Length: 373
Ligand SMILES: NC(=O)c1ccc[n+]([C@@H]2O[C@H](COP(=O)([O-])OP(=O)(O)OC[C@H]3O[C@@H](n4cnc5c(N)ncnc54)[C@H](OP(=O)(O)O)[C@@H]3O)[C@@H](O)[C@H]2O)c1
Figure 1 (cartoon, rainbow, N blue to C red):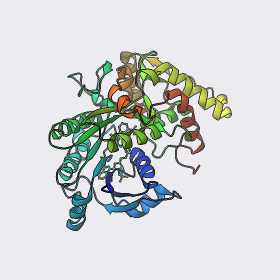
Figure 2: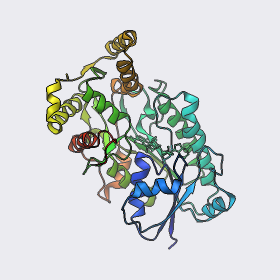
Figure 3: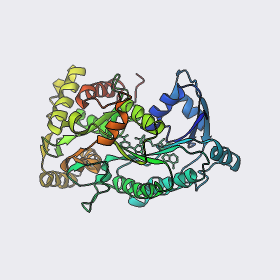
Figure 4: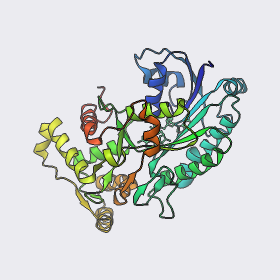
C-alpha cells in the first residue's frame, strides 16, 4: 500500500495544531507542514507546538505562505517532490479575524485557497483534499442550515470573514468536478473536551474575558436561540476520519447540531456560574449577568457606548460586535452527512455544556494564555 503523505497548512493555528499533534503521533506517515516565518523560524514554531509529544511520523517543516502564488512560496525542488508524493491535503490556513476589510479577508481565504487548489491540481497521487470552512458561510440566514445548503441566500453576512469563506467555498465546489475534495465546515471550536486546553485564543475566549471583567453588559440574541460549539478533539478526529476514509466529494458539518447545542441563555448562565465556581473571589466583584436583548436594543447600546468616549468600553463593544450579531440570527446546523460518515469510527460531538466549563477553567488558570498551565 502506498504510504500516506499529508500536506498540511495552518499547522500553527487553533485547529491546525490539533491536527498536527494528532498526525505527528502516528506511524508510517509523512507530514509536510507549510508554516510562515514570523519573528521565529518555522521549525522552532512547530517544535514549540509539539512540546514533549513523541513524534513517530516523518515530519518536514517547510517555510511558505499560501498567498505567495501557486508555488506557495516554496522552491522548485520542494514543489516537485510534494507534487509527486502528496496523497492528502488539509488546508487549515486562513485569516480568522472578524474585523478585517473584505479585501484583506479575501487575501488568504480566497486567493490563498485558490493557490492551494492549483497545488492540488498539480499533485499526481491526490486521494483527498480537505478544505476547512465555517458553518457561518450561512451569514444572516435563520433556521436550519443543511450540509447541502450554500452561502447566505441573499441575507448578507455578519462580517468579512464569513463572506470570504463563502467565496472560497464557491471555488472549491467548482473544483470538486475535477478533484477529490471535501469541504469541512466547522462550528465554533472552543477547546479540548477533556482538559479544556485552548491552543490559540480567539473571539469566543475573548468574549468570556469580557463577561469576566463586566465589559459585556449586553449581548444581542434570543434567550432560547441555539448556540453551536464543538471541542477541538472532536474536530481533529472528525477531519482526519473524513480525509482518510474517502467519503465522496461534498460538504460535511462538524457541528454540535440539533441534539448537542445549548441555548444562548443556558450558555450565559453556565459562563457566569463557572466563573464563580472556578474563581470564588470573583463573586465579590458582583459582575451582573449580561442581558440578552433584541438587535434594535443592542444597536442603541452600541451607539450610546460610542457616544461615551470610554475607550475601554468602546474597544470591548466593537470586538463583540464583529461576531455577536450571529447570535441574533439563530441557526441549527444539520449534520446528517458527517454523522453518517463518522458513525463507524464512533466519533460524535459531545453536548457543548459537558465540556465548555473546562474551557472556562483553562481560560482562568492560564489567564487567557498569559500564564503557562
Ligand atoms: N477555530 C474555530 O472556531 C473555527 C471555526 C470555524 C472554522 N474554522 C476554520 O478552520 C480553519 C483554521 O482555523 P483556526 O481557528 O485554526 O485559525 P487560526 O487559529 O487563526 O490559525 C490560522 C492559521 O492559518 C495560518 N495562516 C494564515 N495566513 C496564512 C498564509 N498567508 N500562509 C500560510 N499560513 C497562513 C496561520 O499561520 P500563522 O501562525 O503564521 O499566523 C495559522 O496557522 C480556518 O479555515 C477557519 O476558517 C475555525
